[in-house]
Image (cartoon, rainbow, N blue to C red; front, side):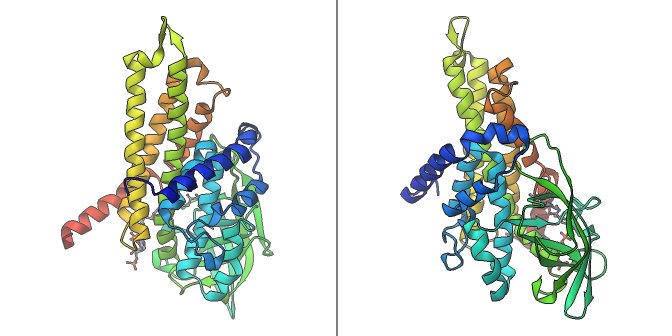
Amino acid sequence: MFEPTEMQRDLAAAVAAFCEGALQPTVEEDDDHERFRRELITAMGEQGFCGVATPEAYGGLGLGYVEYCTVLEEIAAVSGSYAVSVAVTGLPQQILLKFGTEAQKARWLPGLASGALLGAFALSEPGSGSDAASLRTVAERRGDTYVLTGTKYWITHGGEADVYVVMARTGGPGARGVSAFLVPGDAPGLSFGRKERKMGLRASPTVEVVLDGVVVPASDRLADEGEGFTIAMTALDSGRITIAATAVGLARASMEYAARYATERRQFDTAIIDFQGVGFLLADMACGIESSRLLVHKAAWLRDQGRPFSDIAAMAKVVATDTAMQVTTDAVQVLGGYGYCKDHPVERHMRDAKVMQIVEGTNQIQRLVIARHLKRRLATGP
Ligand code: CAA
């Protein structure tokens, strides 16, 4: 775990080379114009990046989360937006693998894993963010169908996805009243509202999704009625590891850029890296990134071993995304006036890093999850 295997090293090198060729040329332009290029997902899918941890039988690479995190770190080092796309299209895959019927898996998994199809995860609502169990979208049972009505907010791939995992209320208030459904992107009654104008991740579409009497066959419900909240939480446990890996990629790219700059930039006849004020900033960046990656890989490894990882995933998310925010901010500082301008990627990395502290559960919610685990462990023993 402390050393990547030869296969993991080769994988990282191959992904880095691919991203340099395929993503780098348009990364700044796409950020400027808030442009999402679906063809890049197709291209990454063809390389296997969209289904790294999905079994080969369903069109994935059949590797684990450690490898998935390795891939995401490399994509994020070039583009945070596309790393998040790959992470988010992975959520429905993990949900299908754990909770889907064979028919549901056969219908969606090969397309999602190959990048031919794009997935989305629709939990948040205008009035329900951190308090996810208070969601108000309703799924009313009518014979062999459900009729879904409500509004979902901040949905990555809204309007682009081929399938949405939608959490909706089939029962009373609270977590136990929530069920999960697979809703095709072209379902009648599904429409798309506001596209958010964001500070960062600007090449990744974040869109309001409106369900106005969307009819879903009961066979498209995932697991039993009332299981939807557990499905969402289970998926987010895994998703938080992928967001943490994305944050490591952003931070690493910023640190490397700043370190190169500080080596070349001379002031007072000295390379600025040799001034302690700058050198120590870079040293702190390196410490944060190394420790973040270790935690991310530990969470991924626990998941791959089939062991509990919910609290470690939350820790990885907190540590890696808070580190990314600090590192990218300091990288801008190292570049000074240059860093504040769009000519250097550290400015984009800093904007992209901010949302990592928010998506898939704010870092305050992660701390709540960790504290609850601590409390439970004290009550029940290790
Ligand atoms: N795995 C499985 N089940 C879980 C679970 C987990 N990690 N966490 C909770 N549950 C279960 C509990 O066991 C409980 O089940 P029972 O009722 O059968 O006992 C049930 O879910 C309710 O649990 P809680 O009482 O802990 O629920 P809560 O209302 O206190 O909320 C919370 C817990 C951790 C705060 C949760 O609401 C949460 O994670 N909030 C943040 C939501 C979030 O992450 N949103 C991100 C949306 S996705 C996104 O960012 C967009 C994108 O596209 C990237």
